[in-house]
Amino acid sequence: MAKKNKFYVVWKGKRPGIFESWDDCKAQIEGFKGAQYKSFSTFAEAKKAFNGNYLEYKGKSKGKTELSPEELLRIGEPNLNSIAVDAASSGNPGRMEYRGVDTKTKKVLFHQGPFPEGTSNIGEFLALVHGLAFLKKQKSDRIIYSDSRIAIGWVRKGKCGTKLKKNQKNSVLFELIARAEDWLKKNRYNTPIVKWETKAWGEIPADFGRK
Image 1 (cartoon, one colour):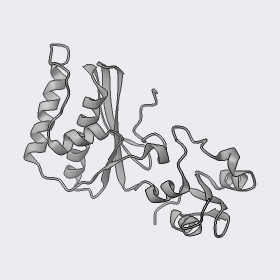
Image 2: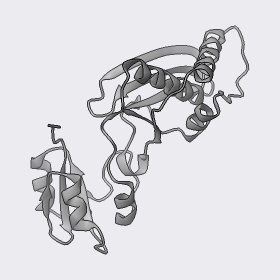
Image 3: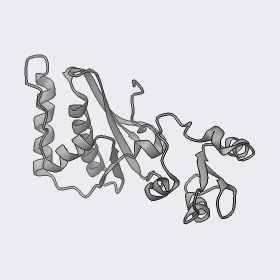
């Protein structure tokens, strides 16, 4: 049985209270105009919030932008049977690295770099392909999250669309790009690639925290 790691406070809904699952929370807010609710990591935090004022907690999660209850309801919660990938670059181009983590635990599953010269988009592309190969090798049914629409588009086209020019400093990186493109050409995969909803869920779990 999956461990429950979130508690949902409903200040305003069909039945206000603290709920231990998204489905129970959703039942209280769906179709309720002006619903007020928020998720918390512990019961103690949820209890404190429920006894407080919604406005004190509204939009306070790091990396989140306030969305309407209807938008949050539509987006729902992330699928924890997944991995998340991300990249970080110090400059554009600059030193770049990427990694993939377990979405639920944030355990690092793979990490590459730093490379002396690269871009975040290249890193995101390589991270996605690395993740696809990783999951295929494991015969896993997990999905993969990325917060980069550009990288997701490149993967679906099977080609890295970077405008960065190959030189001696980034030659190793371009070898990896070629290998990634070759893997996409030769391999079929069923893994869904899903956009991470940063505005609703905060920063992607694989984020390097350098913003």
